[in-house]
Length: 408
Image (tube, rainbow, N blue to C red):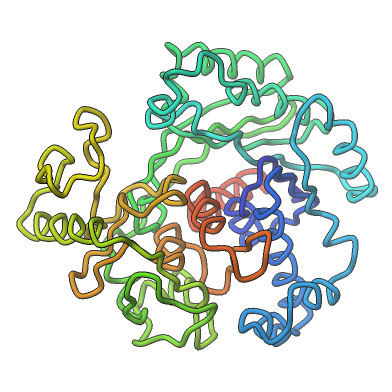
């Protein structure tokens, strides 16, 4: 099964589909840093298939630079990452690039989801003064790819808020539009937790299938949910604010979950266990938030003594300071701006979570390297990519079930 990944981000969906045996034709993404992440992962998969992963490990450790790594990879694979904004102005050029890449292969599937912030309840709050958000109409551009390639199936991922955004008019328009393009569609609100991801993360997953294809929306059996935060944090070295390195040895043994989920997948080090720096005022609030959680409650902004408070607003976004509990809450892209919503639970470390801890909450493997535009300057870019991603474990399970149904 061949697929195209639209609005690909860092490639969480692609990673899951590749693990399930699908073959990517192209990844289309507007963000330059995310495209570099995609290219680095393309390099990983190629070197894994050619039994030459030592070169990739050299890159992870900084022993070779990015340009040298990419030089090992065939040009057609590197050009499968298309750094273009999906739009009426660019689509013809994107189609031409994909047509060249796919040669005589059929496009079996299209996967992806337009930026979700415009539909999310958090995003709508942040954009309440913006009368029109052009991102809400990106589903039309997605549909142009369906109309051009006419894949057997597509997977459209977004936030649950899509169903209620603007009174549901966009949700209704999306369903009507996809049906007009010749697809039956069905959807479910799925929780990443049910797919083994150590996080509460509900997502709207719309699956469409061409009217000549025999298919029905898959049923998913929830996996064992007995894994929690400590199963993904316990083997990582302790950090203070601002500490961390490009790569680091583990400080403990792997847990059963880290092995089963392939988060730890055979190498003896991890990457990007890097924490952001914090000022003393924030750290005092972090300490208070951790104490509150240890006593069984969450701190609200209005609970913070006025002398300590860094945010004057005590009416909106009251849970701005939030400690990662035993079952982590939904990862969001705002973590790229500050770490207040993802405070590490240990008072001995007193910081927000590292890039690698965020990636593990999203189920990315430890050798998945998140790039910045400039090498070694990727912490903020990495947080943004991680917050926006589809957890690979969730994507893999969806891909496997689709393949089982379509293969029969």
